[in-house]
Amino acid sequence: MADTEARIRAAAIRLWAERGFHGSGIRELAEAAGVSSATLYHYMGTKEDLLAAIMRDGLLRLLELARAAVKPAQGTEERLSALVQLHVLTHAVRPEQTRVVDWEMRSLSTEHAAEIVALRDEYELLWQEAIDEGCRSGLFRPAHPRVARLALLEMCNGVAHWYTPDGPLTLEELALRHTEMALALLGVAVPVGVDVVRRCRDLITLMWTD
Amino acid sequence: MADTEARIRAAAIRLWAERGFHGSGIRELAEAAGVSSATLYHYMGTKEDLLAAIMRDGLLRLLELARAAVKPAQGTEERLSALVQLHVLTHAVRPEQTRVVDWEMRSLSTEHAAEIVALRDEYELLWQEAIDEGCRSGLFRPAHPRVARLALLEMCNGVAHWYTPDGPLTLEELALRHTEMALALLGVAVPVGVDVVRRCRDLITLMWTD
DNA sequence: GCGTGTCGATCGATCGATCGATCGGAACTG
DNA sequence: CAGTTCCGATCGATCGATCGATCGACACGC
Image 1 (tube, rainbow over the protein chains, first blue to last red):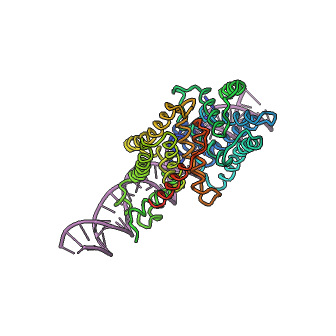
Image 2: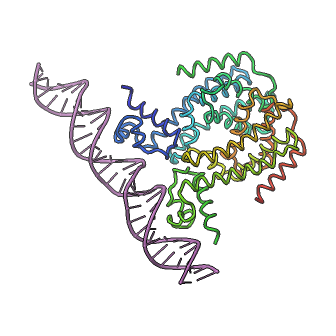
Image 3: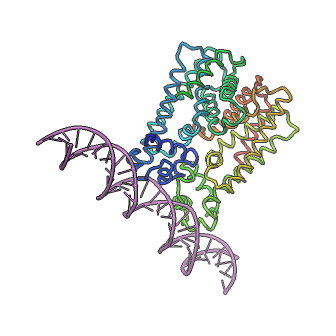
């Protein structure tokens, strides 16, 4: 028998990604997890505690991977490409969890929201720094770097909305097309290099073994 | 005294944009609209009927304006610019309504969802046609036109997430920066022309008088 | 080896509150 | 008076959450 807490968490992610946090009750969640509604409270604290835990985990994982991806040793173009690919692949491989992370912020009370928003801000700071450094070096030429960051993040978030592995796109194509679009949006005309493609493949392997 | 139905609709948009459809009850809605919960049902049918009506109105308005914006008489670059500006300005001027339209689809039952999804597909078809025509003429060079359409729409949807008129960006700057980014993403390097800026100003005037 | 006590895990039953929705009738309008 | 608008009262259902009770597993003293 699988670990009960993991089953509860997986069921919550599935339900909340589909119907939203307020759109499914705890009895529905209990049935999906195969336990009684009372047992839920032995593991999750309140319903909102579970939501915050799911969001915290998703953001911490993304943040950890992103920090490794923007090591200062890398070049400007590689740093932004790595962030785009990591973000897009995460949203494509774990669409349900990322949908909960991205769209259920408003269901958090102010205490929980402060922590989660801080994590998200930390993550977005990595993007802003990568963009700003590209602007300083002259490689990126966005008319407004902050708007470019917001536009890029929204564009990449959207993958969790529409991507399905059943479609014509492979994960590699998905990630590389978004890398190209992101660089083009920032004013870089050159096509992605072979090293970017190779690191993209490494990332895809990482996503599935983790 | 303002029209009761309009007050109800405005209150629903405000509440549902903030807390979500399932996140606010009809008593809360009634209080926000200044009527009793029973009175709501004199105007709105069921709660979900009201949601569908709000989404239908928003999409029909957007569709009508977009159809006028893509008259075949215009050039390729102008068509896509007009779609981007119209979409961005709508999301900036009416963020609450567009948030409900964009993010409450999952709260609709299948019967209502079919109608709303059909309207949204009609709207997105206008974007796809504008992009495809640009590809045929050789002006646009996206590696994958369908992915480019999805990326552009998500990028422009995001405006309703983060834009605030209190910030440093004017509506005109917001719309023009997104026009530039959209064209750059599609592979167009040239800066936006004076006619695009002029039409953007016309659109802003239209948004506020309508 | 065997009784005893403690523990986490789990349950059915149930709490007060709120949910969406409905009713008959009062209040207003023309 | 007829029609429209609106509301207080209330419906059954469901909400998130909690209760006491039970179960098996494990540790301890003798």
